[in-house]
Length: 345
DNA sequence: AACGCGGGGGC
DNA sequence: GCCCCAGCGTT
Image (tube, rainbow, N blue to C red; front, side, top):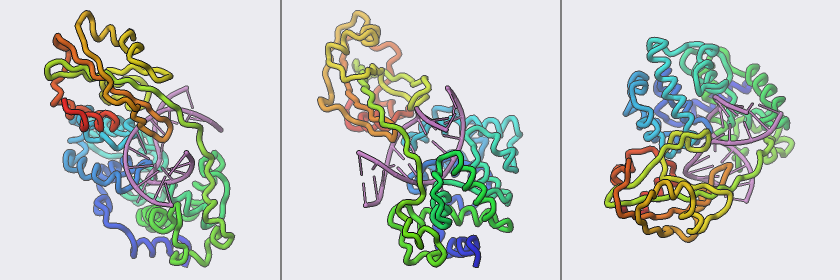
């Protein structure tokens, strides 16, 4: 049997029962693919179910407020995916008259859709023989063909795309594309794959050369940046203050407490003399206390955010305050959600 | 070509 | 602590 027949055969025996495998509705396939970008199936699944429930059609999604979409997305990360998802839903609904594009070259024009996602949708929904090359596929091909070109180099991207193009089952691209990804996720796993039971173990190049552990090769990225966040949890009688992050930075469009960021850890005297603090307080009396003596370190893949929450009680009333009981209606970073969960207003 | 973008889980 | 995950957009 050929490589792709073995993969497809393995898939039919071993595939997981996942909700997006029961449909070819481009809306649902697109939704699932966006959610699964750099995201494990187990993490994305509950979000997919939530979205399909709230937004049964692309028009429902298009007609929702962006803040609502972001709230549903809260905790899934890479929030630009949610903003692009929403913008694309509006585009397809109102510019394309609810007709989801049906070819790779049209699909890839959509915001938030790149080569991988366009290939996935075109093949799964429309039987176009466009190969998907995601992290799973890189791993399976690098190992089976014993290739040590870095998968995230320009040469590697081109090489593996070409290889995948030669291998795709042109008769059943939808099944084959999903098969090789599932095979990578469940059989040819990143760590300790059980090669003893692999259907390709008698022809796998990396296994023969004992190079499973070193393949695929990936150029590692830069260092982690440390940032120091001081959140001002303003409280009067029963209100607090939230603001939206507008900068091109992490958590764009999400809400948070007023923030004082600095390149180092700040003391109380630094906070109370900071311009941002003074402008928030005006002439009002206040009472400030530090909620967490030890900074909470929120670890992201590319930065560590050392966070202190300062509780600021004040006498007067907050302008533009929101009832603290309504914080949960806003999309906030997990860091904030954890605090709100723990702190009793 | 390199970097920024989340959060969770495995070891 | 480091790596990985059904990648994409920007610089």
